[in-house]
Picture 1: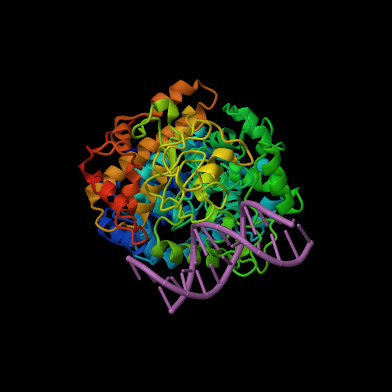
Picture 2: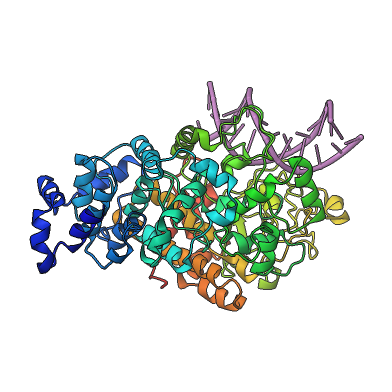
Length: 602
DNA sequence: GAGTTTGAAACT
DNA sequence: CAGTTTCAAACTC
C-alpha cells in the first residue's frame, strides 16, 4: 500500500518521476485509459439517471478527491500532501484494494472527481455504495458495531468546518454528492489532518449512515458530511427532527436539528441553548458535542420503552426531550410515508412498535429503492414539510408582531374537521400557521390562520366569525407543548428551502437548467451556510444568526408581488409538481423565476 | 388499552 | 386531477 501510494502521490514531481515510472502501479496506471479523459458528459448522464439535475459546471472540485483520500490514507499519513486531484484519485483507486476496474478507474482518472461516470443506474450506485461500504470495512459487522457502540463513536466528525465544507461542496457540486453516494465513506477527515483516525471515522460514519437513512443534516455541524445515501440525501431534516415528541418540531426537519429542537420542543418560548437541546437529546453524549441529532436521538430512545406512551408523555409534559420518531406501523412495513420514521429518513429503531418492519439497515436496499420510488412520484416527498422562513416573511395586513409564524407548511394542510386545531393538522402539529397553501376548512389554527388574520391569543375572530365562532372563542387549544413564538430568530432558518432545492436538484426537477440548478445551489449553499453556520455558532447571538439568514434572496422571496404571504422560493421546486393542486400556490410559484439571481451568501 | 376520528399518503 | 382507499397518528373514552 505504501508503495503505490507514495508513488502515485509523487507523480508529477520531477524527483519521483523516475521511481514512479518503474513502479508497477505506474505501469498499471498507464495501462488504464487516458487519465485526462474527461467524463463530464457521462457524469452528467449518470446524474441524470439518478434523477439528479445535471451538475453545474463546477466539476473539477478537487476536494472531492481529497475527501476520498482521507479514508484511504490512514496508512500513510505522512503522505498526505497536497496532490493534484488526479493523483489523489489514482492513489485512492489503488488503495481501494479493489481490482482495477475499468469503469472505476476511468472515472477516477478523469478530471472529474471520482464520480462514477459509468452511467450506472441508481441501483447500481446503491449497490456500489453498499459494495464500497463493505469493501472498505471489509467487515459486515460495522453496523452492529455501530449500533453497539455509542453514538459517541459515531458522530465523531472532528471538524465542523469540514462538515460544513462538505456540504457546501456538495451543494455546489452535485457530483460530489454522487461521489458521496458511491463512496459512502465520509471524509471530513480528509483535510482535517487526522489521517490516523480517518479510518475509524469512516467506519463510524458509515455506521451512522446505516443507522439513519439519510443523515444529511447540513445544519448539523456535528454531522459528518457523509455524502451518503445515493439518491436522497435531502432528508437532512428528517433526522434530527425526527423527534415526534417535539410536537412542534416533529416535522420541521430543520437542518440544525439541535437548534430547532430546542426552539420548538421547548415549552418555553425561549430558545433553548444548544446545550440545553443537547442535553435533552443525548445525555449520553453530554459534553461530547459530536453527536448527531438523529442518531443520538435514536440512541436515546433505545433506552426507552413503550414508544407511544413515551411519546405522549413527552408531548404532554412538553419536555424538551427529543427523541427519534417512533412508529407503530402495521401494514406499511414502514416503507411508506405513513411511517414517520421512514418519512423522517431514519431507520426504525427499537422503540418502534412497528410490525414487519423493513425500514431497517438490513433492508437498506429495499428502503432506498422505496424511497427512490416515492421520490420519483413526488420529489419533495422527503423534503421538509415545514418551511421555516426568516422574519422576512411578511404577513399580509398584519403587523409583524402579529405574525403567527414565520414558518409555513410546505404543502399546507387539508383539514376538514379539526379546524386546524389538532395535531391532525400538520400545520398545527408543526407549530406553524396555516397559509394560502392550505386548503383547510374552518381554519382556526392557533398559530395563524390560513387567511393570516389571526393568531392565538390575539385572535380577533372577525373572520370566520360565522362558523364556529363560539368554538374559536372558547379556547384555542394549544398544542401539547406550548408553541414557541415562531419568530425566534433561529426558527426562521430557510433551512427547508435548501432541502427542497437540493431535492429538486437531485431529482432533476423538470426544466431545471444548469443555470437554474446553479442557482439552486446558490440558494442551497447559502442556506447550508446559514445552517452550518448556525450550528457552529449555536451559542452565538441569535441576532447574528438572523442576519446570517436574512439574505436578500430570502427577503425577496418572502414576499410575493402582491405582498401576499408567500412560501419560500424553494417552493419553486414544487412548481411543477403534480401534487400541487392549489392554484394559488402555482400562481405564487410562477413568480419565483423572476427573482433575481442568488448571490453567494458566503 | 381499545375504539374512533382524522387527514395524509397512496391508489385508481 | 379528482375521487377513493389505506394507513397510522391523534384523540377519546
